[in-house]
Length: 463
Image (cartoon, rainbow, N blue to C red; front, side, top):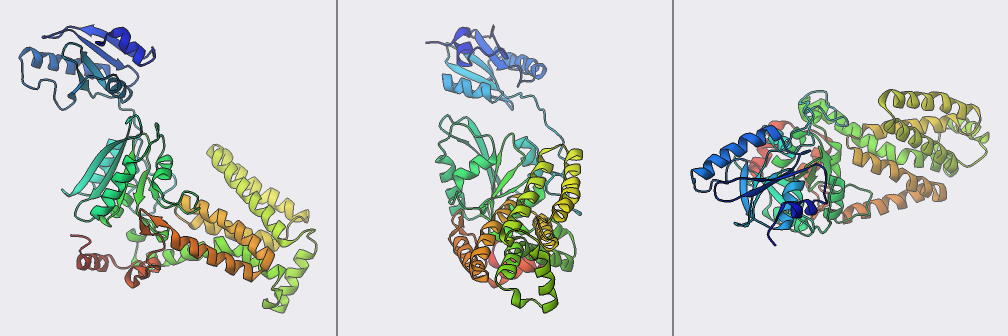
């Protein structure tokens, strides 16, 4: 059946923002249709005049221009074009669609991401427009081998993802793996990078993120130069970087925008914060419950005096305070900023002081939990921050049951899990396992940039 106006309306379920009408064209009548909420009508009229003049002059390939192209007509193709915000001119006799790409651009400014602040360096961030995000990356990588690939995914082929890489740096097998995984996606709809990550990662139930998510173009550019692949989606400011290791989540652009010693100091501080955030509450529970003899006598007496008035064991005390801190953190994030700050102050000072005065928790436990919370805030990655907050609970349970022995068992299980993790087939616990001395140093010390370049030239990683 040849398409007509009524057929087009049925294809988009009689939506009220559909514009559809017959138009005269030099060789036959056509049907023009588009969604008014997505198309710039003023620019469309100008483009229609130009296309009609080219058709009247019988210019070869008149339908193909910078903003238009032609396709064989199918119902699915028409639905796809309209949903993408393109204008479709249908010629029933010729059985073709001329698609004109004149979308309304309603994008915000490229402000700095809220959760990735830096002291020095660029303050630009990605927005919800994929083309703008690619331009921000290209502005930082002025090289011909920066490759951008678009791919339709899903059963209906209606969702587009873009993956980028530097051809002279990336491993070709890595590109093939990403293409294979994207082609295997079977979901009909994608809305967020998080949904896409679940399809791509190999260990969905692991608490550890196997892809780095960032909204900073400078961070994306540096990862591309290291041979990684970056995946972008429309309507999301987040870029997905892979493959990564555990230690990729503890580096920030400030490391390279500050002095070598300063950058190294803050890297060491983040590693220390990781250890503190995971193990400090468990260590306190172990010492108070099983190993108080390791403390100096005076401190041991103070600890016993502090916990004697608490009506339950240190483990339950720690759980109460940790859950209370998580409630405050979650409430302050979900509420508007001024109210969220007020909740944090009221919850942290007023309610916290009342809990101590009521004898529900000890002063020492408040100090331990406060140090733990502050240490977790030092972790620059929001995904890794959540992981660390979750991990401290099983370690506290092990410490409450078996003391230091329980912590050691938990640590061994954690190492085994990390050794089994892969990010796009690459070892997640690298450069510790497999061991690489040069890259191992880079975990703790920010090497001088000139030495870093020289090292990569020797390895053939970078031009």
